[in-house]
Length: 321
Image: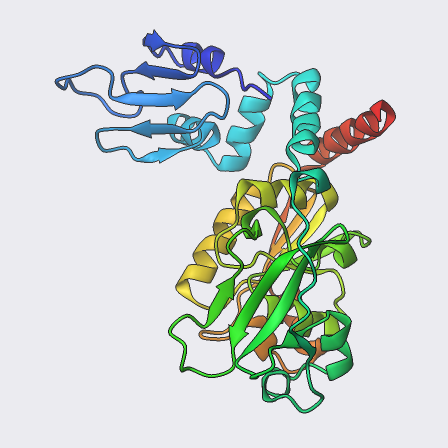
């Protein structure tokens, strides 16, 4: 969906000095003063991402309107929505489906013949408190020398490669991924989780397997702290209720809040949990701890009018298929 960026800028009396069809350059509407160049502000015509090259920072169109109007992001969303037609929103949803990673985009790899099923008393799954039957249901394996634990990465029943974890601290690189593994474009355990109405998003593979073993089968892992645009599109295109359960450290909390902000306008409900300092999801002791963490999380719900609009548009999209 192309946001009506130019119309919004004109509304705020911004003097557009250069519009090349991709970026609009002008004088920053957030600060006054004359500099060497009046083109100290740039905004993308499609996404609405902007940056001031002086002192005002960067953000999206909602951040900009919020600062110009001195209002909340939710109020800014309402203001911007006045410029967006229902047809434009439908195009946005269609684009999310089109841009969603597809099976044909990936190259399937052959199953490795040199790996063995993980032993019943393997120290790694004992330490992670993962039952061996659950580990084997995810086809977790080890090499003949027992140096690394291997996790097949499967997307829509297609084996895309392996991620592995060292059994000890001898290796400087504890986690290692196959060179051609498109890990930033898939979600671990997607095939199981896509069958449920909600999803829990965690960072690590073992976090996802551990929560699965606790009964939270609709859990996916981003294979790292960062979340790519393709992964966000997978989340938006498949679930309306998303629980973000990233690690209890600065990086995890920062990325969780960033992800929530990016998803907020596209789904009905988001819960951002806050794990204790230094704790990962696989450090939680029992399902009650997980439920308590979810209950105490930060809840983000779209306004009813916005939710009804998206539901109507999704139904329209289904009829187009």
